[in-house]
Structure formats: structure tokens, C-alpha cells
Length: 80
Image (cartoon, rainbow, N blue to C red):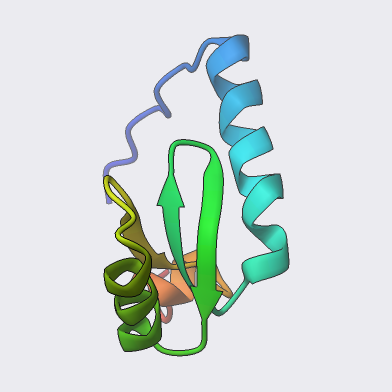
């Protein structure tokens, strides 16, 4: 197996990434609607988040599930 070096990330980019991950930590395993750095809504099911967005008329939100285990949730578990 060929392993490529990890790309270097500027410290300020890494700090911003870590702050974003820390902000999502309370929502692990839940679906969220996020706009910029703000979590607008969270729920157990994605359809509940979509319903909230529709009900409130929120624009520009991204919906995703906050992973419990990033590797497992990305389908990478079981790989060496």
C-alpha cells in the first residue's frame, strides 16, 4: 500500500476547523441544520429538520448528521 503524506494545513485553518467541530460536539449522532457557524435546529430524524426549515422559512441552511465516529460514519470502518 502506498501512503501519501498528509497535506499541510495552515494553523489558522486548523483552529477554525477545530472550533467548528467543538461547536457540533453537543449534537453528536443527531441531524442538524447549520448556516455558517450557527446550528439552527437539531433532531433525531432528518425529516424533522426539513420540516422545521420549511415551517420557519430558514434559507441557506445545510442539513447533515453529526457523526458519532467519523471513520465509521464515512464507511471506513473495518479497513486497515
